[in-house]
Structure formats: C-alpha cells, structure tokens
Length: 223
Image (cartoon, rainbow, N blue to C red; front, side, top):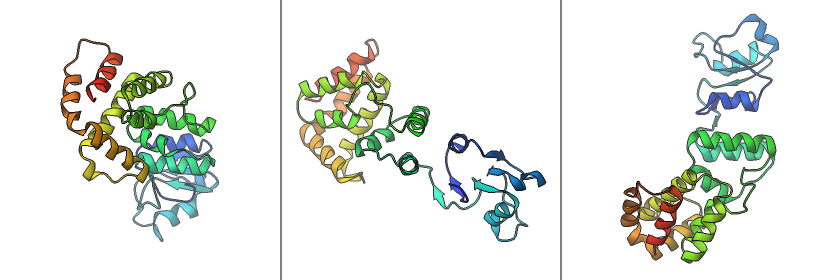
C-alpha cells in the first residue's frame, strides 16, 4: 500500500495494518517528516496530482483519495493482499467462505489473520467448503461436517454462508467462480437443485425452533 492510492471500504483497516502512520485530511508543515494516511480532498492546485503532492510533503504516504493504484474494495482482493503481504497462502475454501461473511465478522477474521498468520478456524479443520461438498454426498456426511463446523463458527455465519451457496446453486448459469467451486455447484444443482426453493422457504418459516435445528432440518429437506 505504501506510496500508492488505495480504494478500501474500511479506512480504519489501513491504520490497523500500518500503525506507525497517522491519519490526515489536511497536511501541515510538520507532516514533511511523517508517514501519512491521507483521506482528504483532492488538491486541485497540486502539480503532478495527489501522489506527487503527498510524495513532496510527507516522509511516506498511503492515499485513500484519487484514482486507485490498488483496489481492495472487495473481500477476495483484500484477503489476497493480506495473504501476499504476510506470505501466508490461504486455501480456495477460505476465499469462498470469506465472501459469505458479513462485513464486521470478515474484518474480525482478517485482523486475526494479520496478527497470527492463520485464518480463525482453530477448533476444527473443517471449512464451509467442506460443508458444500458434504451436502452433495450424503445426509450423514453433511450433518457430521455441520456439527464439526459448530466448534469454530457461529451458527448464523454457517447459515448465511450456506444460504449464499444455495442461491448460487439455483443461479448456477450466472456464476463466475473458480473451477473447483463450480464443480461443487454443478454437483449440488444436479443432486438437489429442484428442492432448494422449497427447503429454504420452509426454513424461513420455522421461527419457533433453535437456529441449530433449523440448519439440520434444511440439510434434511435437501434430500
């Protein structure tokens, strides 16, 4: 990120990644010897554009203003950047799983990954991708995988990710995903694609039962 214009949804993450930098919306003469995260307005009078302006008026900079050199506005590209920056490769399953997370939980996981160098799935070696695959094999395998996942993930996260998977199964022709994930989508579409709509509707109307049981019922209804 250093010396670049960056597009990112959560500017506070940049400060988290670079704690020795200071946030600024305006520069002062004192900033000439400081590392700055700039998120102010474009300087219309600055010769050479915003990058040249910051280069000449800071020790080093990261700009959140201007046409980006680095676009990290999507979860996948942000996770890839962190993975490369930390030299800690992540699996395709983690990439696919991260897309289904809500923004707050994704940031939580990303911060843990930045500090510890591993995605926070420490209590179980199962991932959501394993559940996607298991759902296409047998009910027993799907339920076992689901119960394993509960050791490391909140039920709501599992539910949201699996519902996203089912939406992709229903609209498989619209998907642009990696080949391994596409194979699982095709397998799921072939096995239970016609029952997805009814199973999800049935799940949505079960307001009086525990969320964990709702997921188990959903897996059963997809048979």
